[in-house]
Length: 415
Image (cartoon, rainbow, N blue to C red; front, side, top):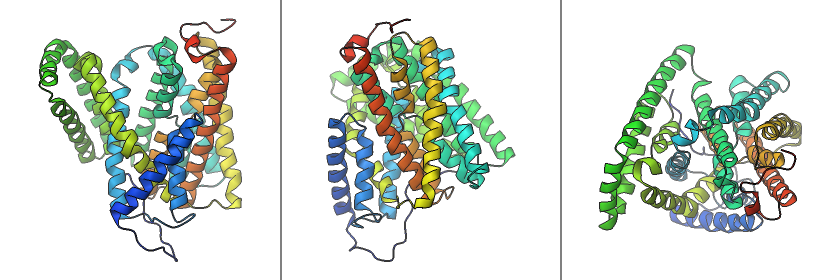
């Protein structure tokens, strides 16, 4: 069974006048970017502002804009570019370094709370299997986009511990996508897809080695295109490769999301050169931050409905499990193995939820794994934790060091 991501249409008895597509995009983009900048000025994730923009403009509040097939198509396109960028910035090198720490973070701070949350959703709250796992996955998974922003802005990305944290989040996201692909399938289908995925990963590994061994030649050719001001060709090649791998994943029954992510992993400065890699990452960031990210998350917000009072205990349960089990695990692991990052800052990193969780919730909604009501629960939980743990991260750094830059290379007191 192939997964498709997007936002489903929400029936509504009373509808506002239908806006044409261009006007809808204009309104969504302006409000999403505006609220995103307001949240960013408060050192909070911009995606939260975009989601709130969708909630305000959607059927849940004003009803100015309603979900449609056209907006769903734009959402799919945006998702491809967002995931491709995540793959490029989470290059294979991150996974090959400090694998012990990366795996430890992913298991303790993501997998364990995910399993506990799934069991509680199924046995305590009586949710169907698909719904229990889908919601738990979207709420428990950390977000590499928020992690990257926090680490870059604090200067911790230049420390070994910062890379370990980024690698742990990247591995969690990769595992999360794999779980999303497999948990709803028959055992035989899972086995076939797992073998196909394993073959592809092995092929990707050797392709990565090949590119590294030919990196000097590749860099010379790429430099020629740069001198001729034909960087667009390089950018086009990356997009075509991402689309080709995504199409292959769709063909063998695995979501294109995972294809876009893996295709991005082979694009790093060791394969294409530091200069070209910088051009690619800056270009993707500009396109995504100015259009695709605010569009995707504002469109996702359109599908959110008002949460009933009876669902508040379940919302509290999801947040409690993530904050207590996942948060405590991240804190203790950091306390034992990190030198330059305070444990509370690690808690803020791994507790932060955002892009990846919303993406998984959107895919689950469009495939009918969860209802609009539980999709809303997942998004509200993600937004609450994104705000809360980002504040924890910034408070921890202000408390332990005089400025973010002082954290670089500095040992934590008592270590």
